[in-house]
Image (tube, rainbow, N blue to C red):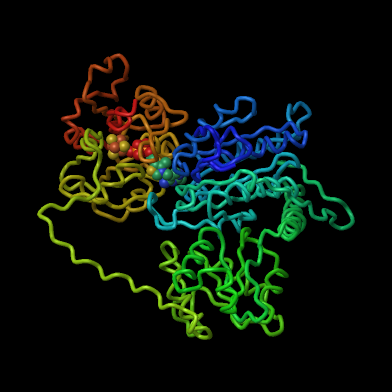
Length: 618
Ligand SMILES: Cc1ncc(C[n+]2csc(CCOP(=O)(O)OP(=O)(O)O)c2C)c(N)n1
Ligand code: SF4
């Protein structure tokens, strides 16, 4: 039924309905996934539940908010959302959801577990996820890591692509390229995890998370094919096992590398997850791409005149769409390569698939030339940095195709010449919101050396030294101040000021303060207490505490002295604090830092002022 044919359409249909056309963003499709899975389970007579856990400040553009919205619309479904203090805690909670099904008092047949986080969260949670992967998943539960990649670093300190990390974590990667594929591949991710006992990963790039589309829900229903599960004469069924000491952990390793990975291969083949889209009998070149990059490749082909699948076939191109790019079936690649002169692998950042293709073909007769990041003469072909969109793909693609079918191609459109910019009297770089507490809190005494922290206040990197001090750069979240521990013994300067947001403090930063005490460091942490995880959309920090409680923890950890600066000192009573803590008006923030710099050891300035954007929202 089309949207127009319906008498009424409600935006809630995207979560409530099971059939018909709905409009969804990528993030909404992710929030719909557990609903769709539990409904499919109920149709099969299964009494399953779902757990979603992660760090709310590591959202895929507000996934945590969307999960809450979706949950409320389906009160009949047992969906539990547990935003936690940081990413590794979320990963371990999802591991627990798989262990729950092994307990005799478990109330459900299985729990579908979803971990969510951005690429830095994946890096951070690596150890926790590795433990969860070894432990494995339950037959009617399943565990999926939803990983947000930001290849152009639009909202991150570093550009990211998680393929190599996920590969190393032994997680098969399913890579959707649009909203519909989020649902189909998301359903496969759960099914694959249940059948094989392996954790699976859904790689979501920002363009797909932020994208949107209207789709027919019927097209997202999958009927998974269960492959042959017999290994060494026995039908395999994984039982999650977290007794991770020898000899059990070694048995689990064998099981993971030998058995579960083989079942993943069989599932991929049985469910035709890596289809050959175009296969002309006279193909001379093969193109391989995945997810968002596959769709961008199709745009690039379109822009040089190969608009339809027939055009592509007539140019002698064989086209492979890897929906599960890692690990793929080597035989699949060997079949694909038959009769080809050349294979071009188009993937962002690391040449992970390119290496796997070469590995699959190594030693086979008449193997085609495999290209990806470089041309045969070693010159760059496909960029290994930044975002790999159609514009970035098209020239290299055109050059390779021109070798044989130049007459069928249209010259790539030259980039329009950059228009000359008229110089303005005023230039404006990104800046804090009006009324932002960081306007006051980032003021520093002259000649200070400052560590920037993660959060809105990272923008000090873009600001004048006169205003925010000499910035020594930024660290990974939770490591604030540790760069000074490594610098301090080797420089004449005796003191350092480190900015740290309260969201970061509760996530992991409090350990950095304890580490600085352990290292006898001479440092002032400036805790920018704005009451929210502001930069990622204004989430509540989980495990958050008030200023008074924080001062108690810090003093117990060995912090020497604390000054609280605030616009309203009457907020606190003198009796709230011991003698090491004092409350000053925010106008004295520079004097406060000068005073703390005179104290040897670790000192803290807590700037207590709410996020202005959050105040406007509430
Ligand atoms: C390990 C990790 N997880 C998540 C993020 C995403 N992230 C970027 S900024 C930020 C917010 C930090 O909040 P807070 O420390 O309170 O500073 P504010 O934005 O409020 O100034 C987060 C969570 C990250 N960079 N690293
Ligand atoms: S969102 Fe809040 S903390 Fe971030 S710049 Fe705006 S007012 Fe400041």
